[in-house]
Each structure stands twice: as C-alpha cells, then as structure tokens.
Length: 450
Image (cartoon, rainbow, N blue to C red; front, side, top):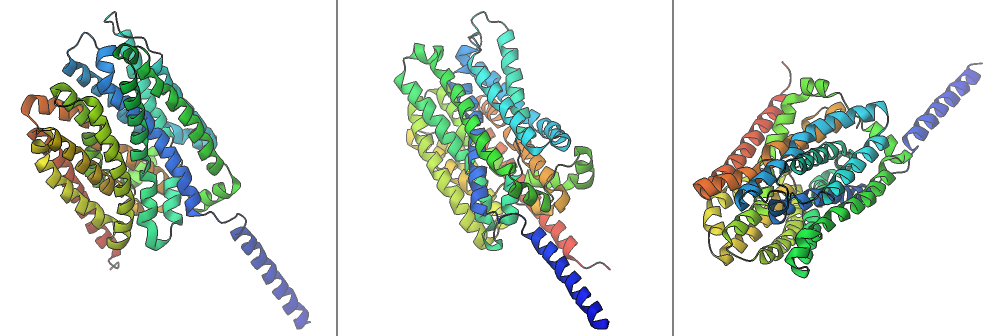
C-alpha cells in the first residue's frame, strides 16, 4: 500500500515538474540581437522626425512661417515651438500608458506612431505664411505638440527588455544599441536636407523641396511600426514582457512610489542631453546668422560628425562593460565640461575651429549619449521599471534638451558664446551631482538592516 502511495506521490511530483517546465519553456527563447533590431529601427524613425523639424527650424521656418520677423527672431520663434514637443512628452506617456492598460500594447503603439507620422506629414501641407497671420503658426504649434504626445506614447518597453535579457558582462553594449537611433536619424535627415538644398534652386527649395523630408517621415514611421509590432504583439515577446513585469503603472502611483528615482535618472543624463542639441541644431543657427561659412559645408561636416557619433556610441558600450556604465557617464560629463570651456574659441573662430567644434562635439555626444539611457534604471523596483524608464527619458529630454537651442541662441546673441559654456557646464555639474547622489543611495541600500 505504501509503495502504491509512494508511486502516486512520485507521479504527481513528476507531473508538477512537467507543468512547471512547460510554463518556463512555453515561448521560444528571445535573442537580445533580435530585440536590438526593433529598438534601433524604432528609435531611428523617431529621431528622424525630430531632426527633420529641428533642421527645418533653421533653414526653412524663419522664411516660410515668420517672414515678418528678422532672421534671428524667426529662428528663436521656431526654436520656441521646437520645445513644445518635449513639454508634451510626459503628457503623452501618461495618456498612452492609460490606453495600454485599458486596451493593449499594440493598440497603444499603433495609435502613437500613427499620430506621430500624421502630425509630421501635416506640417508638409502647411501653406507659407504670406499674409503674416497667426493661424499657420498656431497650427504648426499644435502639430509640434502632437509630435511630442505621440513620441511619449511610442514607448514600447523594448530597451528595458533588451537590458534585462542582455548578458551581464555586455549590458553596456546592449544599452547603447537603442541610442544608435539618434545619430542614424540625424544622418538620414541631414543627408536629405543637404541633397535638397544643393540640388534645388532657392525658389524650389522654399516652395516645395523642404516639404519632402516630412513626407518621408511618414513612410519611415509606417516601416518602423510594422517592425516593432512584429516584436511586441507576438506571443513570445508578450510573455517575456509579462514575466519581466514590464507593464504600465499609473503615473500618480509611479511618482509617489519612485519619484526620486525619476529625477535622479533625468539629471544623471543631463550633460548628454544638453550637448545633444548644442552640436546638432544650435551650430546651424549660429553659423547661419553669422554667415561664417556656407550652410551646405556645415551639413557635410555634421554628416561626418554623425558617423563619429555612431562610432562613439558603439565604443561607449565596450568602455562601459569594462569600466562600468556610471563611471563612463561621469567621465564623459567631465570631458563635456572641458569641451564647454573651449567652445567659445572653437565655435567663435574660423572655419577650421568651427568644424573642430562640430566633430569633437559629435564624438563626445556618441560616447556620452550611448550610456545616457538607463544608467540608473536599475534603481526602479521591477514593477515600476517599464513606466519609470519612459518617464526618466521624458524628463531628461525636457530638462536637458527641450530649450537648449532656444536658450543657447538667445544667450549667445546677447551675451556671447561664453554663456553657452555656462549652460553646458551646468548640465555637466548636474550629471556629476546626480551620479554622486545615486551612488550614495546605492551604498545606503546595500547596508544590512540593523
């Protein structure tokens, strides 16, 4: 009798193990490289949209939408509207997280990318502001705000999933893959504008040529949508996201429970995000206003710089895996501070010095931005990581990059390029301070409870 009971016990235990094993292997293993492809495609499409607007803010919008203003004031007005998207990003994250909770991740992503592509392509249909009215400017502002709402909503959780599934000794490398989207997006946008600006007459460029990149943005978004949906709606990825608890959390609960981590994460990346627009958008405006060199030559140098940024981003992964992501980000903040001190002499100098400013700036941008995302994301409790990573990125863009072109151009034209140095130095100081606080918090958490 006991042997029969023992046999039943073994059979039950074996069945339980089979069920557990089946659950653990119910989806095919997901390779980090496959996630990385979706991350790069998604981020590159988003950055292309933003850089298309940013470059047009200098080359096109002052003449097309603000002809009643001076060139300086027209660029400043375009930069003010440029910042609206970054103000809208946290709102977009909040709205679309609610959509995901009530419907699904695929519904959220489809709606967000459709809104992003539509709001971008609608800019291409705006008429020139020949009547000096405000209707076109208001519509442009609304479309820019909607771009920000959409970008906040397009968070798919793939970077967090990539980080969690990366080998422990290669997390720096996999963290930088999503960041490659920025220089790739800039490379495509700047190449397209350079081609149109050099191949078309001035009249054709301002009449219809500048509109073409905004049409291209819509097509790229469609491709990116299908590339990302292919990942996030499959059973394997859905189960993996759920197992990692990468699900949306209410914003009030998020801020209440993990608000300090949001702000530490945002300020930890501030130097990188402040540098971001100070080497991509701002130099175009400064050189265009001062006419120190041909704008096409500037775009060519920036394209070379974008390649350097790609290489720098890749190098950051190797460096971070060897020396630690936080050490890498802190070291880059120090180098950015040194670059900030030299900036007035470089950007305010001759053509060679200006080109050096661009190339050095892009190289530093790649090295720092490559590890700017998620350096302190591990601070979030697992349940809050999905929403926390999205909001951390939103606030980093808002605090560091949203007003960078506007503030830098406004201050430099009034007080000189030394003011830009102070602005960038403040970003580097915030990064070092946030990393120091984060290290102290980690030390306190690691101490045994008394």
